Image 1 (cartoon, helix red, strand yellow):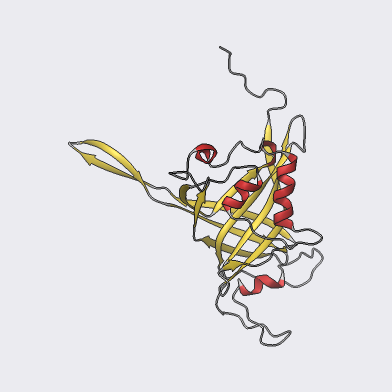
Image 2 (cartoon, one colour):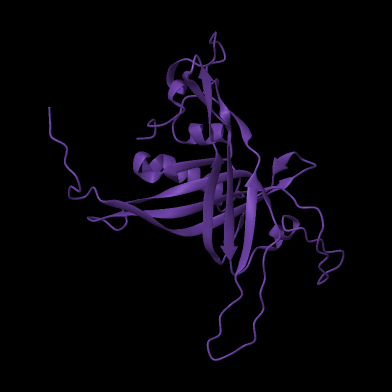
Length: 245
């Protein structure tokens, strides 16, 4: 038995920052996400889950139970600029170089970005990689002001909504999702390097968006056995968490 301790040295963690944003545009003809491109100038990415609202059931004059609605992920991206590949996601078509047609069809996309984790003992205790799948962007607000004695750059902003993707890891069916997070503190350096090589690319490889099952494997998870009767026993039962430590 041990007494609980609050705010112990080295245990006061916090999270901040946004960096290394990568854009993956969906190719409707190939039915797959294209290679990743760096998104410079990102100032903010908000991830705002919605849904999971409670719906109470009543019977025999008492509360019988509670059902919750499905969750969905919405959010906002703010940036000073965007890569040319994002124009298709922002409803822009270019029939000739320099000509931008707005109000066109909007392409689906995915994002990966990084946030930092610090503590009272170590301001660089770790970091998180955030993956967002199945996104579509709404039109951005743009305000152009006169140049004055306090100039500022135009900030672009896009609201996005998501369509969850199906997830099957090591033979286990999980609920469809639009977001997942990887915490470097729980993953070995070797596995984290392998994952980042996939996401950021290398000297001879393009940046690619890994599926949740590919992330599970890159972090040391064991794929389901082809000979297993239920395909979901063993290491896949916990969804791959903790296997990369």
